[in-house]
Image 1 (cartoon, rainbow, N blue to C red):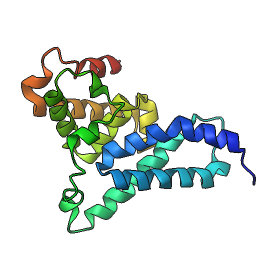
Image 2: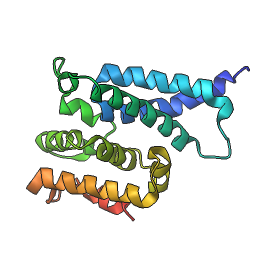
Image 3: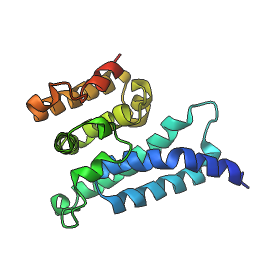
Image 4: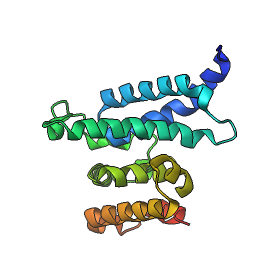
Length: 189
């Protein structure tokens, strides 16, 4: 089947940075994020015939990305050197995790931004995944539920737990007027 090249280019332009940023925040390693992003778009290209155009596109694409990241996490859990991956290159630098489009850009203090990035990076995988989908990608709890194969209530609980963990980890740093929890509290409604 021939694909409309202009439509594919528009799709790529609309989703590449979002998907790459999402994956980058979850895997923390640039080379892995690039590889997984390529895998996602290859998978999307191959699976376009099975896509139902009546359904929203973003949750479908993020589900594919989420599954690719899960596969990586599973394979890493089976490796004995899971903890050492990426640390030799310095690719676990919190400044890289924040990303250029992150919500942390508005923070006045780069030190506070680094603390927040480290705290996000330190969240358990599933909490970090939910936080990134909601806070960075702006997806609804319902859409996130479809992506992670959980009901909306479970996703809201995960998001709430992620915020609690961040607040606990950051202590007083997040309790001021820093803007760290303002957008997340507003997005919970």
